[in-house]
Image (cartoon, rainbow over all chains, first blue to last red; front, side):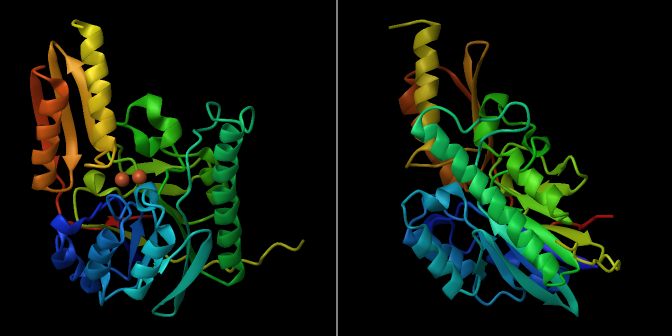
Length: 250
Length: 84
Ligand SMILES: [Fe+2]
Ligand SMILES: [Fe+2]
């Protein structure tokens, strides 16, 4: 069994320094990893990123993160990434990482993801260049997620988790105003998760949403935005699949 | 300008301002109900809540406000969820 701790949307800034550290220091007792689902800062400044870095530095479990839209706000996403990586986190955007949990290989594929909406009511790649760029960006995030999840399968990961900021499903948005659903996620992410048969999908971004959801393909989805889970993190126990996966030929 | 239209625009401006630079607190819902502006949701710190209420006062210019803003909890969860 793999113990996954996760939280997103902590939105730290200098006035919240040290807020999560006491709870996070107990992670060694209850989790094998900490996943951060983006929006770690308020405005994506380096000062705020340093606050996040201080919270994660030297934690007893590995930390894997994606950034959120707020972490892009100051156009310093690469520098924010470096600050977090210097503090020991693995920051994913379109890639994957493998953790060894007592001999079990756990793969995590991450992307911020983007909006566009959900099946049947989603934005199309049509019309103005701005609209096309929007949809194209969302597609690229989803394609990267699918590719890295499949790569993790080829790297013989027994458990694979999709980590995003934007939501793959509308289920976990319940509580948000329906008019803004297209800005909260994209079904393309769910398609990527289903195609590559991930074991769990974790996201944030929807502060007013709900924790539990599921993709059309039956993959469990958890919205771990801090206001939603109401704690410094949530913990999920994932069973280890003992079936031997033979990668399809072709 | 007075009337419902004026208050709609004021609420829209408040939403924009909260989503903007100063607070970036998208976890706050703002609605008009029975002549009151309702603000509810979860914010990250108590300082944040105070700031939101201050901004609401300046942007809403006298519209009566009812606020129910909770501060997010930074505690350890009581139990894990077992996924099958
Ligand atoms: Fe957020
Ligand atoms: Fe967000």
